[in-house]
Image (tube, rainbow, N blue to C red):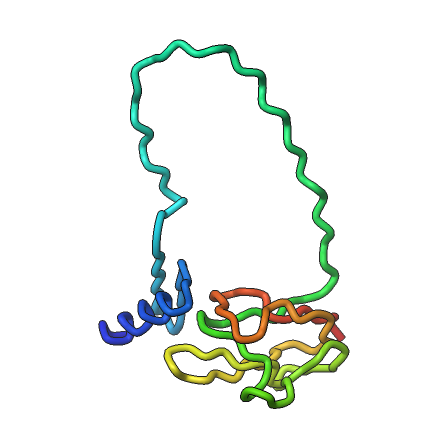
Length: 149
């Protein structure tokens, strides 16, 4: 990958308001992140002690249980814009209830002005469309949920 391609990726990130780009291919790995890196917390400034009124303990927040999905997800192999159909006003590639196999085209992801057909790469039945049509997706974003066959 050359500098020109990296600049194109950065422009794609800006246009689609993406904060992370990660690509691994044939032993090559690149990860671009825009904004604050939450993996590394900045040092907090030290302030002089100030007398304060006593504060009541904060209430404990309890997380709601997460319901596990029984399906398997078709994920995005790249950063780009997700499209359910080959063009505006055209029939979608797959709908809920459709049976797919490894070679079924399920959507298109536009990356750097290239339309990439995405295959299901799994056998099953489409249970849910996770990604919203014509919106940006990240690498490994869930696109569809399928019930394995």
